Length: 177
Image (cartoon, rainbow, N blue to C red):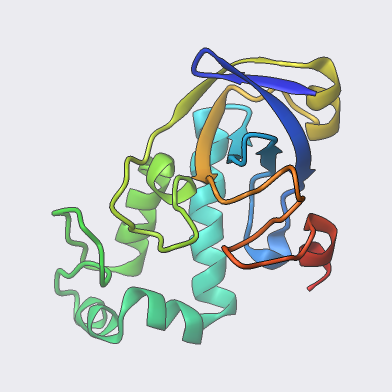
């Protein structure tokens, strides 16, 4: 299977399906180049997935979400004061969780473009155009992807090492955890 993203044809090694239990609302296409891309049928689908991912995280894992956002931010929002999530490098501040979630919906390239080293790692967060996908890939995804977001470059195809640096788990092993 192949996918062409931003004029570069890539061979697909594996597809990790969307898994709402793991708060991953878009499928991840893993390429033999070591790159992993979240893909969506269009920007609107990606935007809704980003919104749902962080809304679900806040609703179903509030302790983890509190650590991610920062307790000071939550306190400010409780009183309707402007604040931004900790480690958030952009200038925008928000006065509520819902206001921030709407910002997330408007910027899926930032949320889906996060590397494992940290959501707001200093890097380019880009929405990439998918120009072509093999019919086999389209059939496996269940849709024709038109946008992609680089998730990371730490996937290693030759030795089939997946996950964070130092990991030896295969995709199937990681899915079961």
